[in-house]
Length: 83
Image 1 (tube, rainbow, N blue to C red):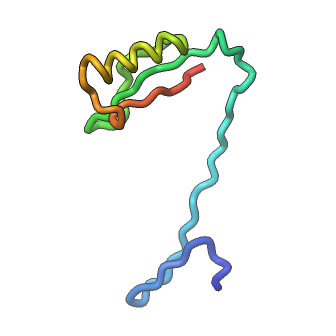
Image 2 (cartoon, rainbow, N blue to C red; image 1 turned 45 degrees about the vertical axis):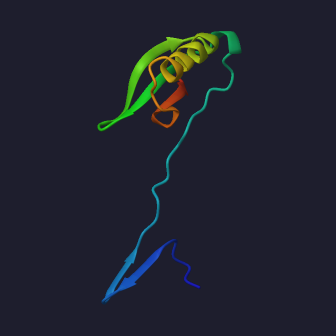
């Protein structure tokens, strides 16, 4: 087995691909009562914010409203913690 991370060989092409290293910082010290969330919708341009700066409970209620009342499919929406 090759020691390269990912190797492609096709028609005389020998390329070595590896994923870039990404530094991710997560602030898990925020108290639950101070956490803020946003609701995003998947559009043709990517994920677009439709509601922001919501508490956890308010975010759940708004998401249910978009899902039940407006009929948006749940796969086209997501909840993201912003703080």
